[in-house]
Length: 464
Picture 1: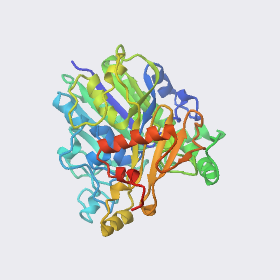
Picture 2: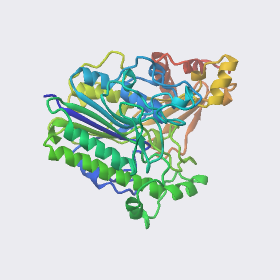
Picture 3: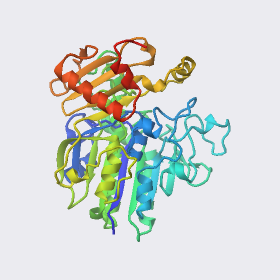
Picture 4: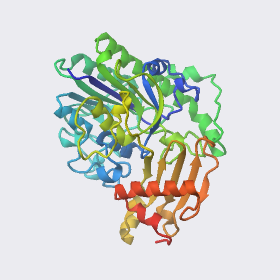
């Protein structure tokens, strides 16, 4: 029988916030132990460090302009997965897997965009996604759209009847995942995705048993936390770490269940995140939609005993690469529409050409900016910022809608010499620096490949 797949991802969990990395002072004993027997990819990248766009990229293997999710699915905008979109769940189901999805989804239109009182009871950003193609091939369903009440979560299964829980969402969702593992059809391999909302804010919605472990913790702030970011970080860091400690404990429960069922060695396990959290870095808190490492840098640990050699590697893996890579590991054909790179040959120890850069991006998400762009006859997706992350550099071109009459601003970061990204070099338009010029060409290649209208702003010497 084919190997199983357990894919666990948290929301807003940055790469540095894990004990095994020796950076943030966070307690993650279960994750640290898992890391010893896993391959850790230390340059895993969130291509669009925002909830809906990056989730869509992870699950479809396609970039935002292709899958349609160019900002968060939220009130006032008709942003959601394109009609008929497919992803890894569809491929797994077609290959005979028992598929399941538990936790936060955030890839459907808020129901109140269409009607004020939906039968499901969904409010604000939230949505019930009924059985059908919008679930991307996941049969077992215990999910919700977007609802940040970690201590009073709710879910839907196959009807609009809301299921309410009176406990921390991570604990509850782990219980549901364990029941899925126990009650699954054992004649089939399974593929289970578990999507945890914490450590996403509200940061203080975490059980006291985890918060108390940080009551005497001295907050040591990185060099790039300054100004207003200092007070913000000191107010929230302990709770952020506490949620991650709780997450580690719940992850350990999932690992224990696999061991008890005797299927741990037959299961590919992935632990990752949709994006990071600045937590005061560069003056930003409760923020991720930016090109800094705290936002785009995510943990990525994968274990497959006997097949993937444990260790740590600095290979670039972007969000869109996850789905094709997992399908490659499972020997399932990668659907042609997927735009990510299949890195499975490399993960299995073979020789393969690896990506030289990871494309990163942001498309405007302000409702008022979308409305103003329509009024002016402008393509809102030609603004925002685009960039690439290489082994050494981050190169970004920024052209916000609010500064549309100005040329793009280009920034070059040497992440090896300046790991806290405090000394960006502002480039000419176009850049005359040899390194920056090469990165600009690589960025333009990405934009042209993706038919991204932002390319026009980079090519033009004149403002709009």
